[in-house]
Length: 47
Image (tube, rainbow, N blue to C red):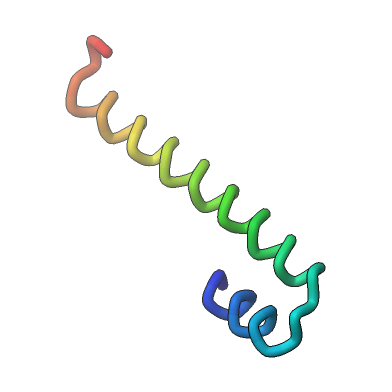
């Protein structure tokens, strides 16, 4: 999804598309953080 929004932004220069891409990046980063935290908790429940 990020690749698509970047491609659209780079071709159009549409600031709304850029802002959407930045919002999606934030969502993906948060999901990755929580997934990593859950995996660590499974491996070491004392954390």
